[in-house]
Structure formats: structure tokens, C-alpha cells
Length: 469
Image (cartoon, rainbow, N blue to C red):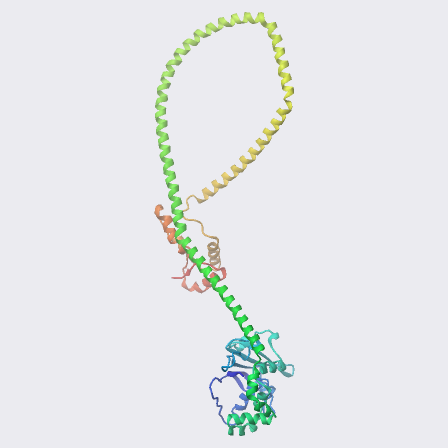
């Protein structure tokens, strides 16, 4: 049997809202006639699915409240009672929390009133119960069967439904005599005589094992779910630490190392160009000396050329005379050479055509590649011209979007990276790496805009701080 720990009434009779603790060993309700003692007892009876006393009905109390909905809510103890059992009272209803909430909702249905019941794990408020779907609410018959499975037997229910005049004389008996009298009144003396035997055989071993297995399966499922959540949380924390280390230490050091390597390469190239320039100057001096010597040799060669030209003219005249004598023979030799060349060309014509086509294809491919490389060069040149003169990297997309939203909302602000400038080029990369976690902090010009800016940051899911100081 379960024990009531608290009772809450909302729009019941003339009570707007009342909460009554019932977790004491003995509960005494005292007051003059008409103070509401029977009203509280009838509320408990209605919550347990029993009839009210004195010919009253739950509909009477609902009408007195002058409201469309009346609520009765109680919290009960769901822990195992006694040393001989480890089963919770509401385990058959798949409720395993230490506390269970019992609720009754009485609503106006046309010109009549209708009551519905539900039970939930834990201490659930009336406002939360009002959000439950209609399929979770039970009728009176199903409600009585569930309470009977939790220990509210029919005999106990009939005792709780006794009229006030019939229960006054029960206070004169001891608990054992009172229990005996109750069973005698309802014809259950045989049950009382065999009470000890019924207690031993009441708990069926198979049912208890089944319930224990259900509880174990439920606990294992919860444990597996919690282990999975803990594992995911640990992985998340590890990823956060890795990202923080990368952002604060590794990436700045790598960038500094890359810039240092680039600077060292440029210094080596400058040194090589200086050496090459000095070598060219020495070569120019040597070429000047050689030029003066060649000019002298050129003058002597000109004189020698004049002599040779005279000799050439004399030799040409002799040669002309010899050609006039050999001209018929030369004509025959020329015709023979032309015939031989023509035969060679006719034999290799197909190969020449295929070679020409292959060269045309290579020419087209080289032209396409040249156009692609030219387009890439133009794009790189444009990106270099856009980045030239800038002393810091462009803002990320989320920072630009959030700044645009603030300007549209009329909130004056500035980014921390816009007001900090590092003049020393040698230390800029290292300093930006150290301040990278705070460079996109948004500073508001007016502290009154902090609430609106925070709302925009939550809507945009801005990952950096928004401060007004």
C-alpha cells in the first residue's frame, strides 16, 4: 500500500488553491463545523476514485468553484515498504521513481462534469500535467484497477468510503481490533484468519522475478544512455581543448615559422641577385676591353676584305667562263635531282600529312593551356592587388554578418581588431596569434544596447563575446 505525502487542490469547492502536507506519522485536521474538513476528505476520496460522503458528489464541489476545470493532485511514496519485498507499489504501471504524482482533472462537458485521471513519475506540477496528451488520461474503471494493483484493495476502499457517523466509534478500538471489525463488517473474517498465510503466498515468485527483470532492463537502458552521453561529453571536451591549443599555440607558431622561412628565402634570393649583378659588372668591363680589341681587328679585316673582294671579282669572271662551258651538263643534272626529289616526296606524303595533323592538335592543346594559365595569372594578380596595403586578414563571414545585423538594428559598436594596430611587422604574427581568441570581441558604444545586442547574438549564434564596458 502506498502513502500520501501531499495533497493539492485547485478550484475545489471554495478553495482557489491549497496545498496540504501529509508526510507526518499522524495527521490531525481540526476545525468547527463547516470549516472544510469533510471537503478535504471528499477531495482525497475523489482522487482515489471513491464516492463522496453525505450524498455529495465531486460535481457539487466543482460547481461551487465556479470554474471550467478543477484539479486534484497528490504525491505518494513509491519506495518498497517492508523487509520482505523489494517491489515498488506502482511497478506494475512501469513507474520506478521514489515519488509518483496522482492527478484528477474535472472538466465541464456541456451541462455535465467529467473526471479523468493520470499518474506520472516524480513530483509533476499541475501546469505540466495540463500539457499531457489526451491519450495519457484514464477513466474511472481503469484508474481503480491501477490503484488496486498498487495496494488499494476493495476492502480498504470501502473502509475509506465510510460515512463520518459510522467511523466515530472505530476510534475506540485498537488497530488489530479495528482491522478485525472491518473484515467482520464486510464478511472477510476468513481472510483475517488466514492473514499470515496470505502474506506468505501473496507474492508470486514469477511475477516478482518479472518485475525485477523489467526494473533491471530499465536501469541498464538508463545506464547505457548515461554512459553514451558521458562519452560524448568527454569527446566534446577533448575536441574543445585540441581546438584551443591549435588556435592559441600551434597555428601562430606555424605561421611565424612559415613567414620566417619565406623571409630567409627572400634574403637568399637577394644575395644571389647581388652576386649576379657584381658578376655582370665584371663581365661588362671585360666585354669593353674585348670590344676595343675587336674594333682594331675589324679595321684590319676591312682592309683584308677589300683585297679579297678584288680577288673574288677576278675569280668570278673565270668562273663565269667555266659555267658557260658546263651549262648544258648542269641542266641535265638539275632535271635528274628534281625527279629524285619528286619521287621521295610522293612516297612520304601520307606520313607528312599525319605529322602535320598531330602538330596542329598539339598546337590547339598548347593554346588552351596558355589561355588557362593566363586566366589564373590575372586572378592571382587581382587578388594580390586587393590584398596589397592591408595590414590584417579580412573578417570571417559570421563576424561580418553579426556586424551587419547590429548596424541594421541601429546599435553603435566596433570590433576589437579594428582599434588595435601592431606597428612592428616582426612581432605582428606572434601578437595576433596570442590575441586571436579575443580579436573578434564586439564592444558596444552605449551600455543600454546590451540587452538588444545579446538577443541578436543569441539569434545569430555569435561565438565571441559582446561587451558594453
